[in-house]
Amino acid sequence: MNAATQTAMIVAGLALALDLGAAPIVTGQARAADLVTAARAQLRAGNVDSGLVLIELALDSTTIATGRDRVNALVWRGVFQFFKGKDSLARESFRDALTIDPRLDVAGLGQLDSLLAADFEDARRSIQPPPTAPRPSAALARLAAGPALDTLYSCIPDCRGLDQPPRALTGEFETVTVGSGGAGTIMGGIALVRFVVDSAGRVEPASITVVSSPSPALRDTLLEHVRPARFSPGRVQGRGVRVLMQWRLTLRSR
Image (cartoon, rainbow, N blue to C red; front, side, top):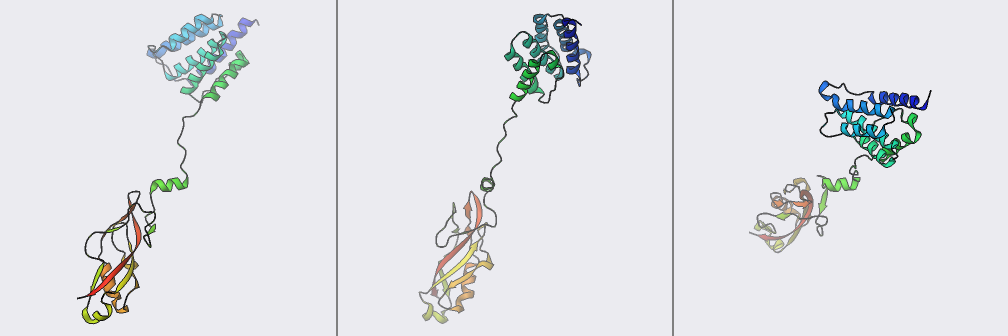
C-alpha cells in the first residue's frame, strides 16, 4: 500500500469519526456538508490549499449549515492548517470547535499524525469553563442575609451594633404619675425598668422587669406605664431588630 493510498484511507476513517452522531441534514442544509466532503477529497488528492478554500466556504456565514456541520468544518480547518505547517492556526480552529462542543471527541487524528492529535488535546486543555462567582463564606452569607430575627441587641449601658437605636414615638414616658397615698415617700423618686423592644417597635410584655423602685408596691404601676409604649424599632442593615432597653423613670404624685 503506497503512502497516498494510506493517507486516503486514514482521511476516510477520520471523516467517518467526525460524522458519527451528526444530525440528519435536510436538502436545504446540505451545502456546508457537501463543501466539507469536497474538501476531504482534495486532501486525499494532496491538494491542501484547494481543500482549505472549500472549508472556508463551508464556514462562511452565508452558507446554510447545522451546528454539527460547523463543528466538523472547524475541525477539518484545523487539519488543513496543520498540513500547511500552521500549527497555531490549527489549534485555534480546534479551540473554536471545542468552544461549541467542549465534549467533542475526534477519533483518527493520531493516525494522520501524532502531533495533530497532540495539538487537538492542547486546544482542549486551553478551553476554560466560564468563571463562576465563588461561594460566600458562612460569615459573609450571614452578613448579606442581615441579622437573625431572634438576635437580641442591647442598649445597656450604651447601644452597640445598631445602625439606629429604638426611639419612643409618643407620650411623656420619662415621668410616672402615681397615686397620692405614698406621695411623701416617692416624691422625686427614681425607678429603673428594663424591657425588650421587638422588631416592630412594641414592648414585649413578658420582658418588662423592675430593676429598682422606691417601693415594691409600685411594680404594677411601672409595668402598666411601660407596656403600651411604642418605638421606632432599632435597625441593623435596614432591618428591625429586638433591643434590650432600660428606662430611668422619675416618679411624681397626682
